[in-house]
Image 1 (tube, rainbow, N blue to C red):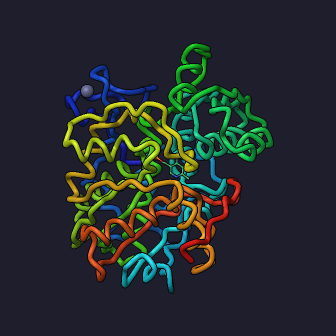
Image 2: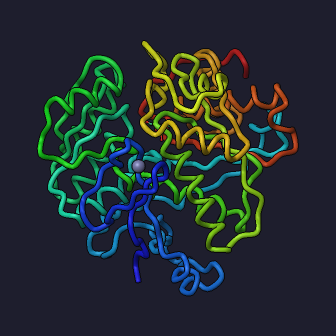
Length: 390
Ligand SMILES: Cc1ncc(COP(=O)(O)O)c(C=O)c1O
Ligand SMILES: [Zn+2]
């Protein structure tokens, strides 16, 4: 059996939906979660043996939503290295820092996990074209997977997104719209145009989170079915955070693991930090951030749709959120490159600088085991030079 998905469920109001017809989000306004037949998976995987010869997210196919392998569009997504840094941890005050290097994905970012799964599943449900607003990487990923599937992709991106993202979408043959403002404005423009496409907007359909949750499976499997003390996620719309938290729930339900749960931290840029503000103010929802500006374009998400789920994951795990300023982002990017030979995207540099703050404020101890997501390659962004801290 390929997928053991049974149905979709709303984590807010518990309404159920079919996983065999198109579904967006719940009538109550919450994102939907995919639910699986865990008892059958337990019988099948027999003590945690996922097929070791499948070095991609599809080694976890039973826990992914696509029923028929014939709909899966594969480009080699996932099973990225979990690297133990040699020097970088020490520079941010840690004994051990590991980096999950998502730049190794087919279009150079972690967006490939979510979009590979979502596009494959929606093709199975009959989708004929796709559209999404994007800060850059999700647009490139959607363009590539749509090209591989042979269907059109419509990408709405803020006009100030680095040129290389437009060029990559163009290379894959996508239809591109440049929109003034942020990803929220790009989303509004997409809605105004209202084409007959399948909407892949962050957490407004249930399957991108399913792909992202493989990050949690992989980190755990690569650590011998344990978990680190802390995972730091550069956070915009929150799919990775929510996905990793869901993965932990599922691994626990499968009884595969006997491990402590990691604390999850969202790292944001001080120029657009709605999640950090909500954690500081202890609110249940996330208030929109006006006039967000940051070089870490993927984190310029003023109003994440899955706000309650993001806050649940952070609070439920005992973690939190941290913001860093632009100068720290540049310095952290230089540090990763010079100290470790790693090409961090600015979003991951936010995470690295955030770790330093969390260690300084005593939220993370020196000898805790910390995993940082390098969510994408730095090569698509120009390098604003700052080696003042190296
Ligand atoms: C490189 C990079 N890191 C992090 C993020 C934020 O991811 P999420 O929206 O899943 O929180 C993005 C989103 O565009 C991104 O491109
Ligand atoms: Zn609901």
